[in-house]
Image (cartoon, rainbow, N blue to C red):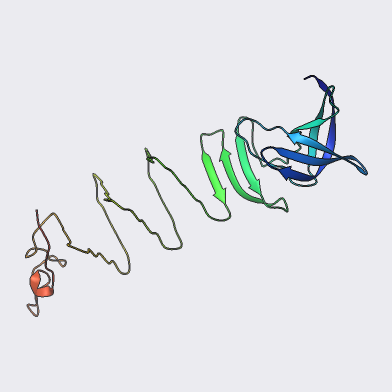
Length: 204
């Protein structure tokens, strides 16, 4: 299949089936169709009113769309930015590969990650997660947190519950004193152990 001349057209519609067919306006009252050709692995449909680069296939009289005139999102030489838009052209999600090695992911709504296999993450420096709402971890098997340093949990209320037992492998029940001493210096009341309702702990 040879290649004929190229032209610019205004996209005014589309038909999405197994492939994407675009409707474009070549000139006033002259509407035509063109198959959309994207890069391999790229599923992206232009918005209405965007300008298309169209190439006429020699011998058939038909056109194919091979490019879209896109506004810059700030990419510098060597960088790559992928972005999604709403019907009005507003940016609602963006993935940026910056030339300093930074990868930046932005979104106006939910972030959904579905992995059928295993998922791993290795970070050489620190990891900080800031969440304004609730954080929930759910699993059907064991959950393990390991650290070679200090492990700290802080909260206005900390609740730990177990359907069968609660195991703290550091000291036994009798010696488990949250305030550091077994009894109050003034009243003599116990600070820990079974007398305070702390039972079922297993030391190791």
